Image 1 (cartoon, rainbow, N blue to C red):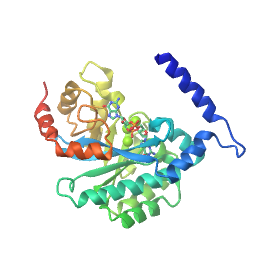
Image 2: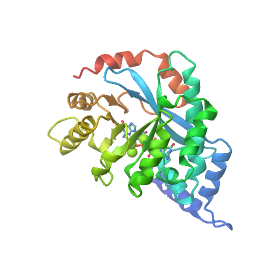
Image 3: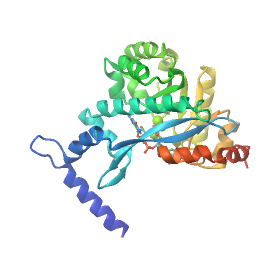
Image 4: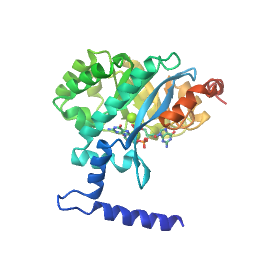
Length: 288
Ligand code: C2E
Ligand code: MG
Ligand code: MG
Ligand code: MG
């Protein structure tokens, strides 16, 4: 049955890649519609601190397709990058995330939350990047100090001077920058000294549960590097208690992953907030 489903999906994929008269693939046309007609939605994945308490969330986009159901970003972000649709998509994500942040600020149980937003390299390279961020913050009334922009190394390295200048100008507002998937990029570490980065995000490929694994040495190295440079560090993709206690012993202070929660729809996130499960996880965090 699974194979049948796969074949059906592949045929579907071929079908939707066929170009129409305008040279657009059906998928591209549909993605334009999706952005315009509100089919995109942000999911929120909890991030926790050293005591296991909820400190913030990462916004992760999904596409609620009217026929195909929920589509994950790996299936449309690359197309969006190729076609330039990442620009309107990214603006929508930023606007929606900042509006949510402003709404959370008005409620006691959510007022402390930080919000991390993924920014594509393409968006960061735009000349109006700084203006886009600042005007969106202004329009939505979100507190910049609660906003964390996640960039990847590839967004920063091709023009380091430009990246440093843009980050400095944006940071005047008080927001923070995080380096996503850290360790998977070019890893020329010299650039880190120059960039005003606040947080390194350990890629989940280095998240491991014991010191014998080579990935452990890399995770430790990233944690040490962050500490030495005065940066925060967060591990993504934490799935087990053993991984958590290993990271904790290495001095990592922040975590995100299925162990705490998968990304949640806005409704499910409300449920998550109303349940005392974060407290029991804090208890479990001492390590087993
Ligand atoms: P990312 O920013 O590195 O996000 C982390 C990914 O890991 C998310 O996948 C998340 O669902 C997944 N994840 C979280 N915890 C676990 C875990 O414990 N185990 C495993 N195996 N996976 C975990 P998702 O949501 O499918 O997003 C994939 C990528 O798509 C993101 O990677 C990011 O690069 C991109 N993306 C997502 N939303 C946006 C967006 O709004 N804008 C842009 N430009 N890119 C986005
Ligand atoms: Mg991210
Ligand atoms: Mg990541
Ligand atoms: Mg990733």
